[in-house]
Image (cartoon, rainbow, N blue to C red):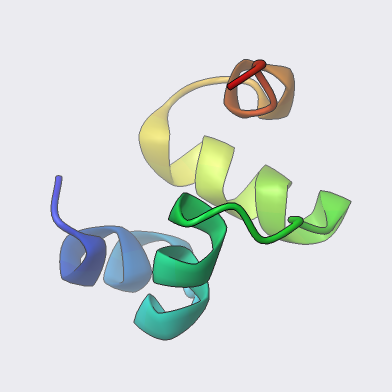
Length: 49
């Protein structure tokens, strides 16, 4: 899934997705939206680097 596709599916701005991918902290509501769009749990997105 591209950043643009994830942005559309989650309602999160593509720039925010890029920032998160580059290490910026993610707020719980944002993590929930991303997880829902990706079909996983928010905790799955919070793995260690």
